Image 1 (cartoon, one colour):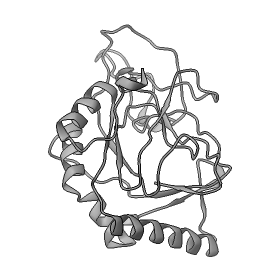
Image 2 (image 1 turned 120 degrees about the vertical axis):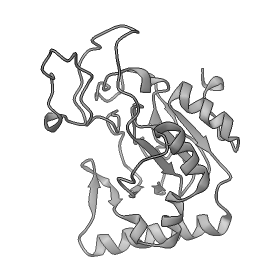
Image 3 (image 1 turned 90 degrees about the vertical axis):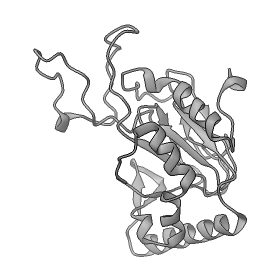
Length: 235
């Protein structure tokens, strides 16, 4: 199966085909060595500064990992990431021409970090409901790790993509350092995944070199992997 799954590519058409079929793609060759080095240095420094100020925000309760928020305000290199032409083209392919930036964060996944439960980034959008039925779940009652059994077959209506996530690989992403786990094709499931760990569906690691971008339809089931190395993985 893995041989037929998306591989890092510089080909925009290939990446768009990967996105449509599998729910994700990996674009590479987007940044030069100097840009990658600046990102690595800046994120590491920001992480240390926020730790020292008591601003360490745990990633989903995982104490070994750290979120840093509002990266577009913390260096031009990070602002340039969200304006990169290849990224804008791919996000436009998923969402259309009009969209908003809703988050610009960094995550440091340090040694010892554990696997996160599978989830989608579009968990907040209620399921389609027949017009003569009251919605089963109101929007404000939605929860990231809520799961229920599949309620229909292949002709069941599902929501279209309402968000697109871009994970820039600030350092290399590998199986060993906890590269983002992905369930290929799950963007078309129309359901939220079972959050049990170990996972109850097959997943693969979104592997790539520093400077690549893992881009995925926000309906795709995914999770932070376990970092079994002695160095932080930064996205």
